[in-house]
Amino acid sequence: MAAMGFSQPRPPVKRQPKKIFIQRDYSRGTACRFQTEFPKELQGKIDEEAFVRTIESINTIFDEAEALNCGAYSEGCLFCLTGYTLHFCYKTNYERVCNFFLLPVICISGLWCVW
Image (cartoon, rainbow, N blue to C red; front, side):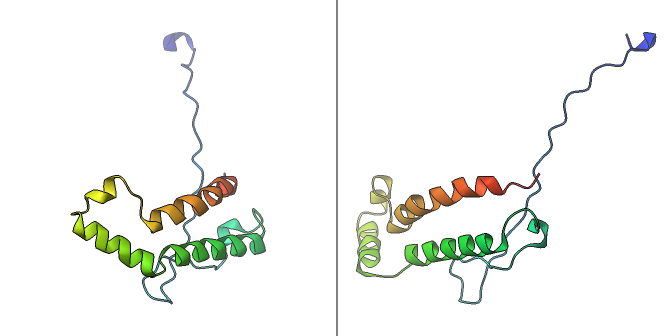
């Protein structure tokens, strides 16, 4: 058919969303935190104050998950005593906190895809 002047239909091109990376913040050590600096790629796409509030709330969630307390030490001891087999049937405090609090944040961030 190409010889008769008909062109073959091209498959539709999927546009990949532009990825924007939020840099890690090492000002307080190696704890999992993100910089609240507003990326220039998001200017005009989302509100800067909402972005900063969201990043600060994510940082607070990670601070809570990584907090050292009696429960965290007890978990560590139990995991060592059971040869880490307890890990198969028990979620750590870090996993519980992150799963509980970060799921809504991930859902909200789905709205932040820049096309």
